[in-house]
Amino acid sequence: MRKRVAVIHGPNLNMLGKREIGIYGGKSMEDINNDLYAEAKKLGIELECYQSNVEGEIVTFIQQCRGRADGIVLNAGAYTHYSIALRDAISAAEVPTVEVHISNVYKRESFRHVSVLAPVCIGQICGFGPYSYILGLHAVLEHKVNP
Ligand code: DQA
Image (cartoon, rainbow, N blue to C red; front, side, top):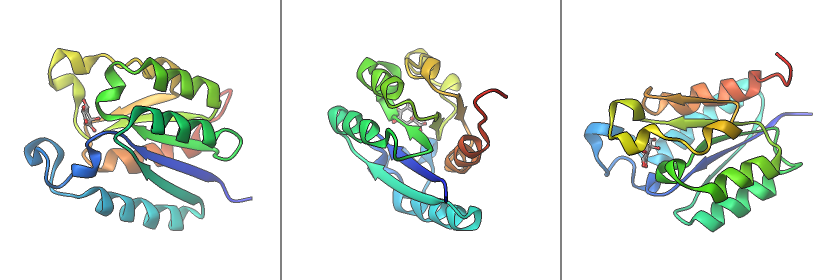
């Protein structure tokens, strides 16, 4: 059976390509999704990309991944830094999840240095621009329960 991975973009990531280009670059979310779909084709996996600005909608989407997805690549945007609801959804879904960020959050404001999601994720990738998502896709596919 082909592996299934969900990529989730959180709030304001639909504004990529227009928003703070000096930090996030000129690629739109659609460009990033197209690169991800091309990579998924090469890897022979099924991919679904989802975006919402609404915390509860992302919670619902993560819940729906339970039993359906083999992995999640999640850029939760600003929710990363304070959403216990997203953290609980990741725990409840029991789907291996990789946290990704376009920017290197550790070079930025101190409030971005905290991730409430990281403890329930396999790991975190940040600072590689849109390529963080491609790295996240490979990372979640390579993940072994007991490495
Ligand atoms: C981000 C980093 C977050 O701190 C910020 O709120 C975002 C984007 C990133 O991809 O670098 O919206 O997740």
